[in-house]
Amino acid sequence: RKLGLAPALSRAVATELGLTEPTAIQKAAIPVIVGAPGDDAPTPTPTATAIEAYTGSGKTLAFLLPILSSLEASSSSGKDDSGGGGVRALVVVPGAEL
Image (cartoon, rainbow, N blue to C red; front, side, top):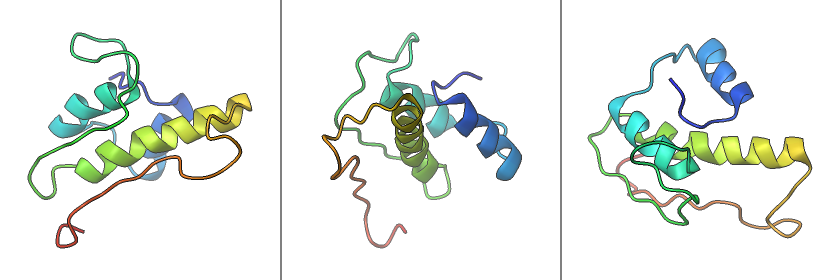
């Protein structure tokens, strides 16, 4: 299923991690975070995202895969929107969760 992730990242997740089917929260969140075209996904990419779901539902990958995909896209294209370094993403989670 198309989530809008970089193709190399999607292949790596499937082959290296054995994750071939996204969880429900990943199906809902990843296209929105990456701004992939779809019925529910806005374009452009949001600057802030909040996800609420049960422990073990796949929230961590729902946040991290779009970040990694964005980093992959910017490094392979030679474009760096960060201005030469600095913070590219910030994920805030409750301490007891992780």
